[in-house]
Length: 165
Image 1 (cartoon, helix red, strand yellow):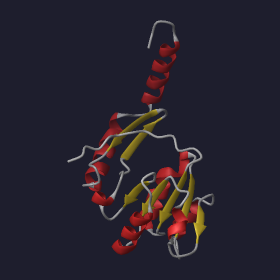
Image 2 (cartoon, helix red, strand yellow):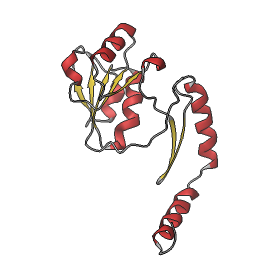
Image 3 (cartoon, one colour):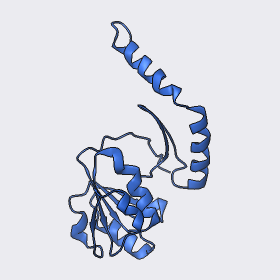
Image 4 (cartoon, one colour):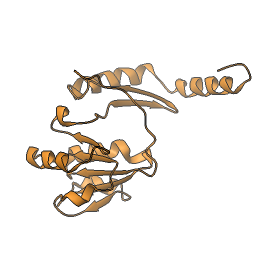
């Protein structure tokens, strides 16, 4: 079995295309909202929650192969496994793909994340149990309180001093 590798990416000016307009598509979009990426939703309809983010582009149509040709990240978040599989087949080797309905069909998974300033703590079950990831995230939110913003800043300041890394 191939082992997953946790990474933290800067997505500023990258293109993310999400196929689907329901609750799961919204949750995935919300994950990337503050990343600086350009987010596009391809779906004949979307839930009202998307109005919360007017800067997300919605293209009101069914998915076609050309919809993802310039995307860096492609997420198939429909409730139709055949559509999700077709989206996967349309991706290139240079695109990161996530199928919300099939973890084995995905190049990556989005972890549960706790943020405290520049501190990022993530939990992943490699897509196998989102409920457990959510539970662990909740526990970590209690442990890593807002005080960690100061701790990270103090360590960052110390790192700038000569002879300290």
